[in-house]
Image (tube, one colour):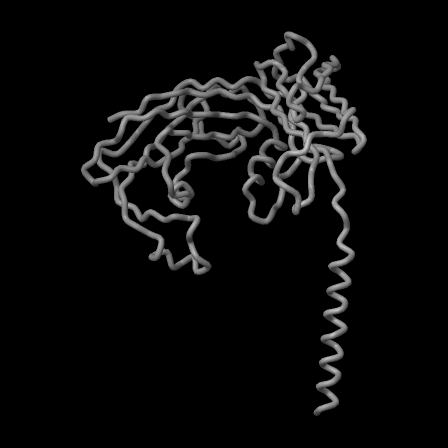
Length: 297
C-alpha cells in the first residue's frame, strides 16, 4: 500500500509540472484589424471605424490601426477613397460631398496595412418605409414579478431572494410596411423612453425581433405586419399609463446582417458572426426607417 502511494505522489508531481509547462508556452496574441461600419440605403457614405485587436489581458482602450493603413470603398465599381481623420480610430470619405447610396448597389471595403489585407462586401437593400404603428394598451396595469436579472444566483429557479411585485402596462404595437418583394431580413425594435429595469420581463414580451421578411404577417390590404410588446412600469395598480415617447425602428438587411444581429448576445460566443475576411468586425448594408409616437391614455 505504501509503495502505491509513492506512485500516486509521483504522478501528481509530473502532472503539476506538465501544467506549469503549458502555462509557460501560451502563444502570443497576433493582432488583427477590427472594421465596423454600417452603409445605409438613402444615406451618404459613412465614416468607418478601424482598430487593432488586443490580447484579453490588455487595457480596454481601443488601439488604432497601424500607421500607413489605407482604406478604400468601392460602390458598384466606383472607387471611393478614404482617409484617416483627426481621431485615429476613424476613416472618412475624401470627397467633400460623398454620394447617396441606393438600394441594389454593391459595396466592397478593403484595407491594406502592415497587419494584413482585410475585405468585406455586400449589397445594399431597397429602402423600407413604415406606414403606421397602431398602439394598444390595457385599461389598467397588471401585476408582475420584477426580477433583477443581474443578481439571479446559480439556482435560477430560486428567484424569491431578488424578486419583488410591481405593476406594468404591456403595450402592444402593430407596425405595417409595403411588401416590395424583397427577400431579406428585418430587425424590428421598440424603444420607449420609459425603460423597464427587468430584462426577464422583456424576454417574455417582445420589444425586438429579427425575422425573415418573407415570414411577416400580411394584412387584408397586402401589407406586411409585425407586432411587438413592451412594458411601462407604474407604481400602483390604479396608476394611469404615463405619457411617453416611443420610437419604432425597422432595419432591413441580408442573411449576414441577421447572423450578426442574432449572435451579438449569444452566450457561447466571444464575438458575433463576422462578414470581414482577414480580420474582425462587421460591415453591413442596411435600410432603416423609424416612427416616433407619443403614447398616452
